Figure 1: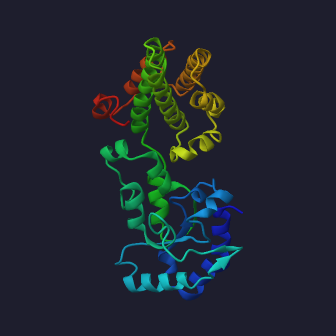
Figure 2 (figure 1 turned 180 degrees about the vertical axis):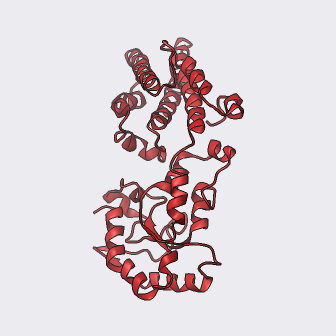
Figure 3 (figure 1 turned 120 degrees about the vertical axis):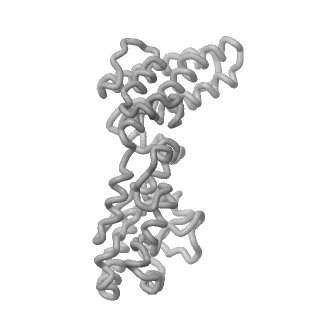
Length: 313
């Protein structure tokens, strides 16, 4: 049983009855679910994940204090604390999890302010350009069990993915980084005899490649340790996972260097094919740099289009 399943079962057996029996007047204003930080919110947890911050638990979301008072919040917190201390062989945490309170009673505005930097799901252009993927993913992952008030679902919908122009700006910058690190600097570093710098170029190419693949799939990229796991589940370009892993783990002999250059061009070619399928470029060239600027030219908002191509990177 993974963490999401554990949370759903615990909520249905104890959480929902508690809310319906003790707080019927508050139910129209409440939402409940499990999302935020933690591998369980992505469905990626396993037995190793259970060594910290793992418990049967869920989140109850409240609107502002004018709608649900502090007194009601306190009573909900007390009722939540009285739920069974263990469930299905797992003990609930006595102390707060590392990094803050992941479960329990939360104000909706506080949760989204902490995860996405906005209390109501409205982000400025500057925020869209700068906020990390993983933060937006924490605001939109997991499961929402119910939302009687509607606010949580609405905010999650607003944050579902980047506006198209922002996606294109991020995509253009990462494509240019792929071109510079993989197609240009990798072989030049080798020619200079700078093998360590060549490996750094490989890593930079790989990091930008991952970003590009997630952007082409219109999915937020998770925290780095889960990126390859998530990559293998994507509908587009998941087949690049072995090549990207090989780039990361290959040795440093001349044979490996030649193979890496071949892998870089194969990965770049696959990315260009999807760019063309999404009508983001029409240039017949293997050079990713040219495609990066073609994608940037597709941005409709003139202010955003004319910003430095790396503005969203």
